[in-house]
Image: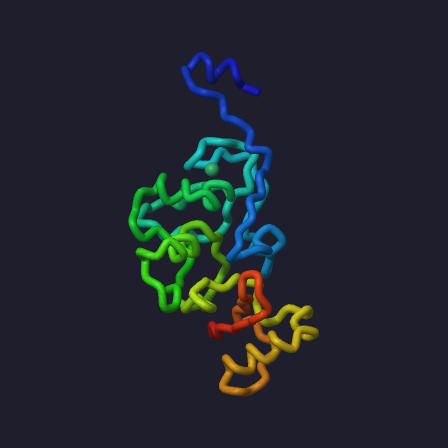
Length: 189
Ligand SMILES: [Zn+2]
C-alpha cells in the first residue's frame, strides 16, 4: 500500500469496507441479480465518493442526479442514506419510478427512491404498494423459476388484461415484503 504517500500528502489512507453487503428489503436479491450481464453491484477497489472507503460493492446502476458525472457509490452508502446526504439534492433517485399512492414526504418513498438500488427499465413506472408498504422487486418476468409460481403467473396475467404473458422480460415482478402477494408491472420497450 502507498500509505507513506498518503502521509506525505496529509491524506488519510482509505479504509477497507471489506466488501460489505447490507440487505435491501425492497430489492432483496440485489447482489445476485444480473440481467443481460448488467450486475447491480460489482466488487471493486473503490474508493466510494460518499464515504471514501475502498473494497466496496460499487453500484453499477444509474443515479438520477443533477450532477454531470455519475458518482462511484458503495452498497453501504445506498443502504444507510449517506449517498443522498452526500449529493445533497432533494429528489435524488436510483429509479425512474414513482411510488404509488405515497408522496416524497413519506420516509418509505425516500427508502425506495434513495436507499434501494435500481435495475434496468425501459420506461418510467409506478412502484407498487401493498397495504401502505412498497413491495419488493424480485426480478423480470422471463425467469424460469416463475414457471412454478402460480401467483406470479396470475399477477402477470392480471397486468396484461387477463392474457398469459409468461415468459416476458417486459414484466417487473414485485412481492409483498414479509407476505405472499405478488404484483407485476409491465414495462414495454
Ligand atoms: Zn460508501
